[in-house]
Length: 115
Length: 112
Image (cartoon, rainbow over all chains, first blue to last red; front, side, top):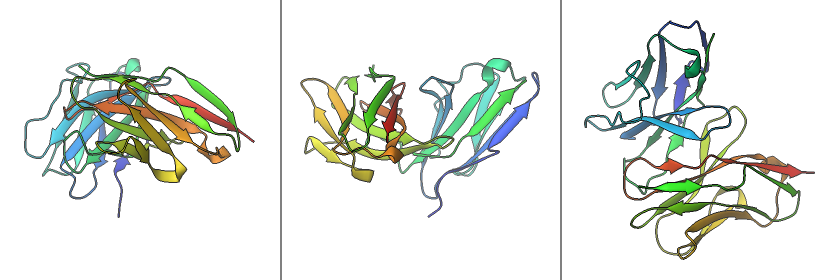
C-alpha cells in the first residue's frame, strides 16, 4: 500500500515568509508525528497527534510553529516568519497507534531552505 | 526520562565482513527498542524492534540486534556487510510514552 507522503519535497523561501508543509499518513494510522532533522543532528521531535486527542506540542521550538491535523488524516505544519535557523529537513511519520510498541513509518521529508 | 546513545558517529567496514553498530539506552521501566535506516535523501525506514521475548531480534535485509538488559545495549549486527548497506542508522528507545527518543545516528560506510 501507499506509504507516508510529504509535499513539497523541497521548499526555498525568503526570511520572514510563511511556509506550509503537508503530510499524508498511511491510511488507518491514528498516530502522526513531526520531526526536524538538521545536518549532523538526530531527530528533533516537534509535535504528536493521536486520534481526536489534543496534540502534544511540547517539542515546538517557538510560537512561530504550529500544526493541525484534519479529519484524523492529513496534517499541515506551518512556520510563520521563517528564520534561517529553520532550515532543515522536516520529517513526518505515522504509526498504527500511539503506543510504545509500534514502529513509525516515515515520509521522504521536506527540505526547507530559508534564504 | 529516557535517552539513547550511539557512541560512534561513523563505522567503516569492508564488504563481506561482519558489522556492528552500537546503541545503549537509559529508561525507567521496560524498554521498547528500535532500529531505523536512512538512505540518502530518504526518510527513515524501520529495520527491527525489540518489545519482549527473545533477546536476539531479526529484521529486514539480514540485520539483527541483540537486547542486553544488564548492559542496557541494543547493538545492530549483520554477519556479512554489503556496499548497499552504507547508510545512516538510528537507534530509538521508548520507555512507555508515545514519543520515542532517537539517537544522533551512526553513518555506516561499507568499502568494496
